[in-house]
Amino acid sequence: MISLTRHILDQQQLKADGAADLSAIMNGIVSAGKKIVRDLSAAGLTDRLGTTDERNVHGEQVQRMDARANALFVEAFQDSTIVQIVVSEEMDEPFVVAHAEGACPEPVEGSGKFAVFFDPLDGSSNIDVNGSLGSIFSIHRLDPAGNFLKTGCEQVAAGYLLYGTATILVYTCGEGVHQFTLEPESGEFFLSASNIQIPASGKIYSVNEGNRYKWSKNMVKVVDHFQAHDEATGRPYSSRYTGCLVADVHRILLKGGLYLYPGDVQKPEGKLRLMYEAAPLSFVAEQAGGIGSTGVERISTIHPKTPHQCVPLIIGSREDVEAAEQLLIRE
Image (cartoon, rainbow, N blue to C red; front, side, top):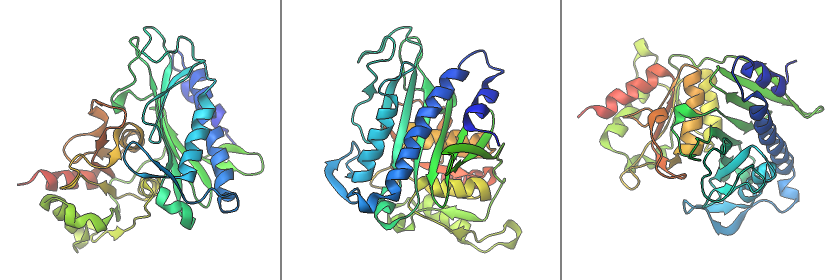
């Protein structure tokens, strides 16, 4: 069996540098992930269910396990010498790693280090009901000026952890998409699927239809399209929605179809975060032959303005996302 560390080194061997750095960052991510798995398994016995009195930068109530997961990811990099910036959904401001060479609150010219972005615990509404949860990550190399707000196509690596019947890690470093499964006895992640390809079209759509009353007319047409009966194109599609972005996107990665979280009349910019939700998941989808889109432009080409910028998201099989895009741009 091929371990995650071995696989990363093999993936990076043809590149000029960065294999050891990427391996170290990924080890920090999986270390935090394994601690989250442990804490989730006993959350009901350790007073870690329920909410805190805090709200995150997006105004959402912070769950106790949200705060715990965030602390674990920060802890994984607080003594790092290669990660300088940690950005998380649960922190208003980026965390600057004091031990990183040349680290300081302002960008350092020539620092040559990395920034890591996280959604520490995706699907928080599922915590108290033992539903699917996940963590999303994105890794960027700081440029000579210390800039960490870059387009999705500049990601060094990205992926997610899914905490379900098994704990899996899916990641890409721009050389295909690979899945690893946590082997409980050894505590190691081993390769369980390599070079995953998303089907060109699928049979599933995932969207929170409770928001339908807030959608644009064209967005309603998109969902109506996938619900309509048409034997030639395999419609209607089945509706699947868990309330966990990672779980829904993972299903579509393997089975095909599309996930939609559009903007609406109240929040036209959408709700999902570009840097640590939409961009990393789109990087995975596109490396697997799919598409990540706002409906009018590709997620990977958006130049971020802030660490917590929000965007609409349509992600999944190429033919399905393109069909949605065509419906959205029609008058």
